[in-house]
Amino acid sequence: MTKNQRLAIALMCALALLLAGLMLWRQPATDTSPQPDAHGHDERRADADAAADAGMGGIALTDAQIRANGIALDQAAPATLRQRLHLPAQVKVDAERTVALAAPASGIVQTVHVSTGAVVRQGQALVTLQSPAVAQWRAEAQAAFRRLQLARTNHAREKTLWDERISARQDLEAAATALQEADIAAQAAAQRLRALGIEGGAVSGSVTVRAPFAGVVVDKPAVAGQAVDESKPLLTIADLAHVWVEAAVPADSLGQVGTGMAAKISVGTRPDEIDGTVSFVDPVLGETTRMATARIALPNRDGRLRPGMLASVDLMGPQAQVPVTVATEAIQTIHEHSVVFVRTQAGFEARDVVPGRSDGRRTEIVRGLAAGTTHAAGGSFLLKADLGKSAAGHDD
Image (cartoon, rainbow, N blue to C red):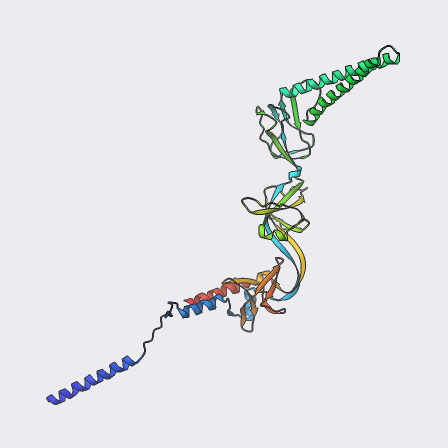
C-alpha cells in the first residue's frame, strides 16, 4: 500500500468519527428518573400522590367473585334515622340508696357481725361496740324519766289540794311548770337516743349498730378491738336493687343531651340492650376530664348489674326522615376520604361521599350518592384492602 493510499484511509476514518460525534451531540438524552420542577418538586410524584389521595379507583370483579368473597350488595335508600350519641359509661351504686354507718359515739368495737358482700335485711345487727358516752346518755334518759314521774305525782297532789281549797294557786302553777320542764327534758333525752339508733333500757355502754334498710355490705373497715368515733365509718350498705349508669359526655356534645332522653345501655357481655332514660345531666364539667356526667337510673332486682362494670350508652336523639342512606358498614375511609364502593359493569368503583347523621346501623349520605345506587354493603372492607394492594403495586 502506497503512502497516498494510507493517507486517504486515515482521512476517511477521521471523517466517519466526526460524523458520529455530530449525530450523538444533536440527539437529546433520555432520562427516566423523576425530574424536579423549578421549585425542586417532583411533578410526576405529586400527580401520583394526588391521584391516590382522591380515593378513587376501580376494582374488577365478576358476579361469581363477588359471591365467593361474601360481598353483600345493597341500594342507597331513604330511611327514618334516630341519631345516636355513643358514650363510654360505668355502673355505679345509687348514692341515694347508699349509707355509710358510723359509731353513735366514741368507743371500742366489740363485735363485727357481717363481712363485705353480705346481704343484710332491715334491722339486722351489724356492729356491736362499747361506749362510755352511750352509758351516760342512757343514765341521763332514765334520770329524766324518773324526774318526769315525780313531777307528775307532785302535780297530781297539788291539783287535788287546789280542788279541795287547801293549797294556794301558785303552788299548783309551780307544779305544772315543773311537770312541763321534766317532760321536755325526758323527751330530749329519749330523742337523742333514738336519733343515734341507741336502744333504751338498762344503763349500759353496749350499743348495736343495725341496718337501716335491706342491702349489701359494700365496704367494712371496722374490725374488733378498733377505737372508733363519730367521724369514722364502720361500714357502708348499698341497696343494689337500683343502680346508676353514668356516661361521660364531652363538652362539645352537651347541646345534644338533656334529661328525659331515651337511652340504650350495653353492659359487659350481655347481648341485649337495656332501655333507660336520662334522669340527670351534671351542669359542671370534671376538672381533669373536662366532661359532664349523664346519669341513667336502672332497676337491678336480679343483681346482674354490678357496680364497677364498664358499659356504653347510646343516647337517642329525635327521629328524622332522610332521603339517601346506606348501611354504616358500607362507608370506608381511604386517604381521609369517605367512600362507598359503587357497583359497575366491571366490578366496583370507589366514590367519594359526604356522610351525615347516623343511628349506628344506617348513615345519611349528604352528597355523592343518589337513591337507588347499588353498592357494596357487607364486606366492603375487602374492597378497600384490595384497592390498597393495587395502589401499593403501582407505587412499586
